[in-house]
Picture 1 (cartoon, rainbow, N blue to C red):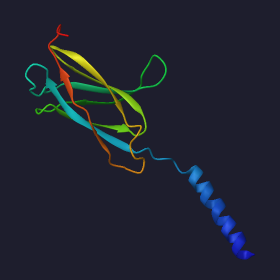
Picture 2 (tube, one colour; picture 1 turned 45 degrees about the vertical axis):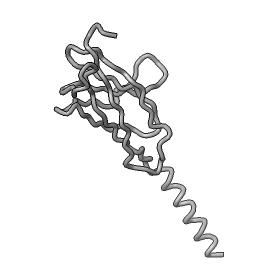
Picture 3 (cartoon, rainbow, N blue to C red; picture 1 turned 180 degrees about the horizontal axis):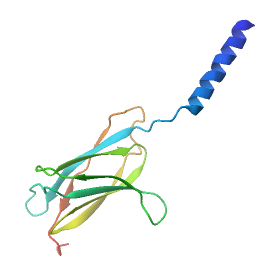
Picture 4 (tube, helix red, strand yellow; picture 1 turned 90 degrees about the horizontal axis):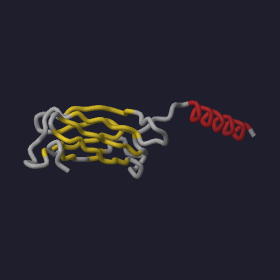
Length: 125
């Protein structure tokens, strides 16, 4: 009988701790390159913004980044969501793409998603 009471007490304690413990959302590293459409050369100093896709007029900004001399960027985003990634650079048209981390393995705390973007000259479509 004591073993049963002890087992029930342990189970109740474990359940209470599990519900009180803050749930950790896995972070995903989003990486990629920004290139010039005509030359495919890297675009240094391009500004990137990633917004969470939710219902409503205002999309929450999740993270920002700038490209380095190789046109590369990296930012952290939460797992299990959808986003809009936008890249801008002076003299070039902005570009936006959709990114999803919804189908990534939720047990993986180190996932990397790669997304490249190409920016063309302003006025060119």
